[in-house]
Image (cartoon, rainbow, N blue to C red):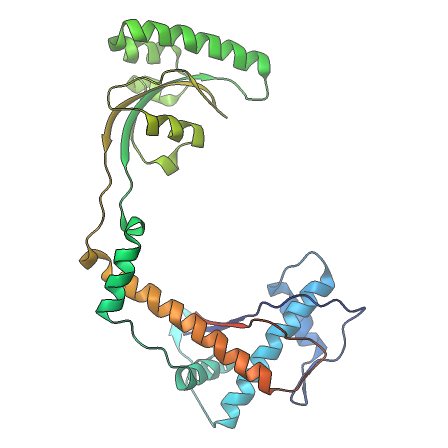
Length: 279
């Protein structure tokens, strides 16, 4: 299991990088420079500070592991083998950071309080006729809207003509299927298209043409299948994993913060919250 360090601290500005040390152990400048690639920032010095802080936390963990006399064999996960330092940090976290297992009652409370998170999305079966026009081309958009309004008026008098009119006018590949888009969820379409679908009932046409970045649409909602809340048993394992990771994340952050508060750190300020994450 690989260990990575993520540290978030307020940025403290100084004129230039200075010597960084942890309990008398200097962090080599070259190591900080190499670490900078993992901490993109607007300014090079901000990246340098972030890299220095990450290496300071890493050094703190290594010093603590060595003080405890820990050792660990590197593991391989997803084809990647831990470095010896990563293995040692993993052993330290396993040894000193207690993470209680979430029990069934805790998982059920989370489920009951967050049922919306475990609801499958609504499914919409819809058809449309697209009058393509770039949004930035005002003349083309106006012409497309006029055409759409004329076709929509025809459909209001003769709804059964939708497929034929889609084949004749639509500039979407779905025209070959009479405008049928198949089954959709709201996150698969533009916000404007989604808003229109949410206001419609099965069998209805949109009241007015709908404009998106693709052009002007006439939309028909053919069918809607309501989403359903998944039973607790189907998501219990996922909830337990989430709660376990959440507790572990907080416990690791608190552990690193304790190490920071007890250490002598020079050259960089670690004031604020520290986060240590095990991947």
